[in-house]
Length: 263
Image (cartoon, rainbow, N blue to C red; front, side, top):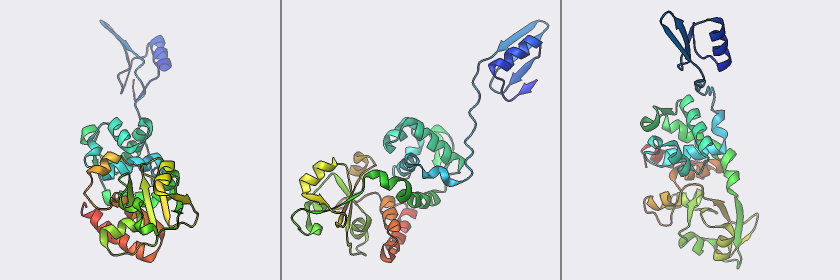
């Protein structure tokens, strides 16, 4: 008998009843004149994840992994542990995310030969899912300057090395095509330290929104020099698209062209 897989219990039953078998993972019972072989206990083969839609991309941990793969050159070919560290995700979550991406056709090859496929579609899907499934976990909160100073000239936006601009502020720095009405800041600093250092107070209607940065600070330091520092282009694009404001969406289209060209 040849079968895809036989459990230990079934293998022992085949041995007891004298049935020869061989399965696809190497378990076997062969009892013929002059030869005897009995192997059992080899684990069930891992079945490929059957993702039939893109619901798997709605997990925050998966979005972290996708972002890292899309923004760090050559990361897809690295070991899963390295990808997990770059994404700030658990090892198991990263492994599951990679399996989902393979099932959905966004990754081809295995291990050191992994490659991203359908990259543009993955960028668009990531940007669509980001405000739904990940952004809210970055502790977004709005602030105003304690002394009522003009936020546009504050040190947070000009002299702070531990933050990166997102949204309209980043778009203005990148394109000079939009006049930002508010600031979106991604910060690696402890939130309390950031507020004290730059004299900010919580204000639901404040012009400065701060979120926790979720990509490696070292990776930001290696990015192309732009003053002030801006978040990765994909994240800026996602911020602008999530605003649903005409001018911002228009600029997002300009940034998508840069993404297509590998900027």
